[in-house]
Length: 178
Image 1 (cartoon, rainbow, N blue to C red):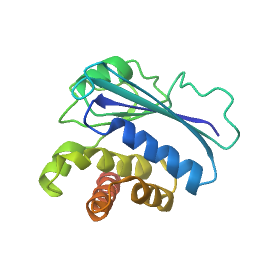
Image 2 (image 1 turned 90 degrees about the horizontal axis):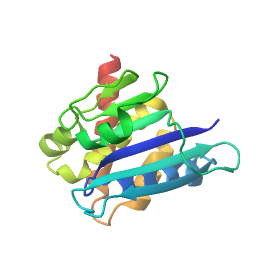
Image 3 (image 1 turned 90 degrees about the vertical axis):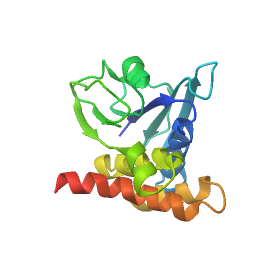
Image 4 (image 1 turned 45 degrees about the vertical axis):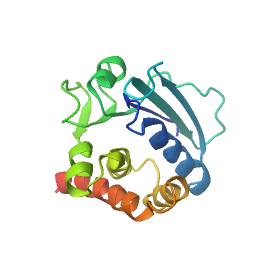
């Protein structure tokens, strides 16, 4: 089954890294095919950033995301540019502290930035909190696969912090599900 995921936020939030990690989890640890693409503004840090991942059980013949079925939105501008017109069938994870609008599709409010800052002590892992929430909310890749991909992708010496962030994101979704 083909999944099209779009991540958006601003440069410096780790939007592209989150998409790379998701693609790695799918391709290396879940035996699926994955393609990742990215776009960011000329301002880079602080400018608009978007990254997409296509995951499929079959070889991917068309690597572009045309209509995402899943969105991860971490900034107001990212929502306005890439998420405001999400189809009703889509699923969206939004950081309520960073995004003012609300979509018409199914959405989960994941306070990734405040959790990273207040619970984990490092706002830089907000993207990993969101990645954990994405996996718990959608099951798009296995938890084992995303854990391995995070450990493969983060700088040495930050593994414990990033695994805590990943698990906190998963917990946030489970707490809401009850």
